[in-house]
Image (tube, rainbow, N blue to C red; front, side, top):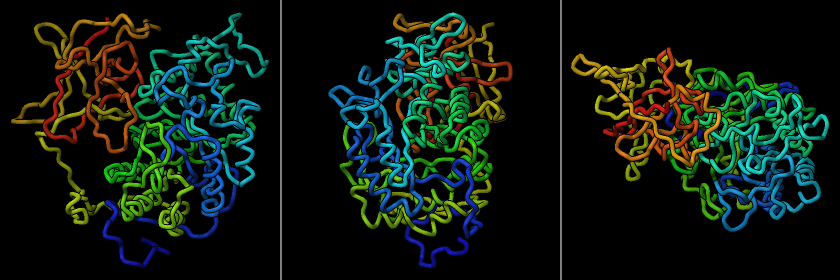
Length: 568
């Protein structure tokens, strides 16, 4: 490993990859850079889902300050939906339960966070957190809420304290909300904001000024990266944070389909960015992080230039200790399903990859074994002070089955061959990736009724993946806006299922180990289902502006008969 590495025999579980480390022991000079080192802290999501309240949060923060702050864990973060009323009928994608002020901005649920009654904000909680020596963070969704758009709230101009007026017009939420770009996995919650107009930027400026006034030190903005990629809004938020007189760390999420090429265009605007789907306490989720960690290390993205400091690829939270389940209305009620060795392996990988370390378990039930894992002094030094970490390419080990879970198979990584009988799946990546080239129109019977891409050879002939073409079909309940932007767009439809169109982003939050296969839902007028073929032979998503890439599916023999449907 390197200087200071443990000398005891390795556990039965060996990490799937070995990293070469050059350790720089000693103390670096303090400076004012944002996220000079990978941030550490506690986040409420893994243990409380969205239902955390003030009492539970403050109890966890107190333990964070007592037991983990000496080890560098300093951010206490309230995760999503802190503005949602915890009443019957409320859940992740419910509508009409959010607290919003007269300007369309969310404020805390006053029943769950009673100290917020004085200012409809988190000022009192932030002050208490700061008094413990900690930093205070909150989770946010991108853009503006559907509730604010439907109520057509005015937009605050923070320079005047009055409604925003430009070109003689008083602008409202309906003017800036992009209803065709609602969040793929929370369509009744939030949508993108039009940042090309002054009113859109004014709304976001009023949001982040309010958070700074509350004393927020860290924001995690969700449904804005990966397949939900919204680069204009990311850059706008980054610029607005630089206007503030209070330093705020910017973290973005989720990380589904993120590649180094995609991060290249955005990492300089943020301090943390998720590079996988949600990580839960299954070995399948954990093991999916090895390859992606290797790719970001090889691309020199670890600790690269970020917002007013550095940026860090984020492998997601550490789901140890007492947890809840994803998307349910229940607090911590079960123990982590990872074995002790699996938890130690995960902690080792997160540390070697220099990922931010955000503990997710309920700290009220923190046991000594878990505490020893997340405060291992050697791993914490590696996490902060190692450099030039990279994959050791010669061998890796692979867990085979529950019955033989400690056996290993060692394989060469010099050559990788895709089996010809494997299925294919559509993935998404930045359009600058050369692998997105090669889509073309194929004419049959005098009509350009297919889009194809070659992906292999068999018997000296190209093996092609093709999409067919059919007549347009729009449903009556779709709200159509900005139609002039969609004259050249089309749908990709599953021929075997009626009214099923290909989505560019999953309609539910994905875990890190979810298999990348095409996902279909009811055809509708939404940027998530709109595509175009450009002159460079790239198949472009209108939702994220990412490009389609053809990949081998993890499930052998899965093929999809998709037809290409033009909207006009």
